[in-house]
Length: 317
Ligand code: C5P
Image (tube, rainbow, N blue to C red):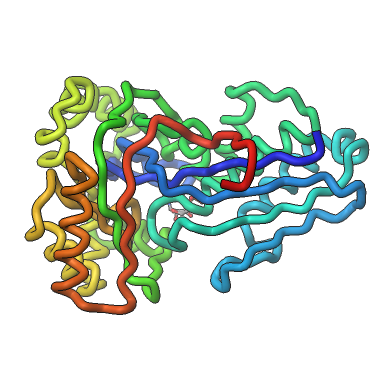
């Protein structure tokens, strides 16, 4: 095998709760994560030369060592030097379709795909649990991006518990093209404003993570109750992002007014989504919001929930 094509889906957060601070400096989180069909395409090709080269046409994607794709390659090179020496470098071509700095784990998906791609090309034979461990070293959302589907994520976000799929739902996802939000900024600002509400005791934090199983949203997911899921969407980071970015607040309000099952910001934003029962409903909401806001900067996607993570495709579709 000399080359492999992979699709890496974006995600939305149906639920994001910040429980408290962790000794490692991260936040203890409870998240309900959902993969969506909107995906990046990555081609990995063995070249037989030493270099690892990343190509991407998108002007806002860095193709230098700061890209998480390089971090994933470097991690595997360090852990498996014999495989790198044996098979050599790769050319990685990224076709970027997922919005950047949008809170939908586009970069994390690319890192997850890199682990899968090199596992295949360098014949590493890594199993899912080993890939998950490597993924957690690269970022909190990378383990979810590997498996995708519908899942509960706890800890830093790296502990993944798959849930029954919610495949039949659609969504409209929107983002102002020129607006990006830094995830560290969102969490640090949240800490500055809300650390008084954090659960301080580590056992109490763990206990909270377990009680999520009896929460109405998780029950609604298990019962496939779409209207309930829409009503119970939640994201603590909205409390800091919406006041600081009035444009995101306005976008969220326009979506909420347009209908659907429920509207929420995803991750640390600034993307906003509305869950819908059907593609038709999603398209109607998209048209209404685009007409109301009439902004050339506004990007919208109608897409659906999928029960997939990183997956192999035969060609570059
Ligand atoms: O893990 P990742 O690199 O994606 O995290 C980006 C940043 O988001 C972290 O540096 C941290 O500031 C914040 N974060 C956090 N708690 C988490 C996940 C992320 O504070 N559980």
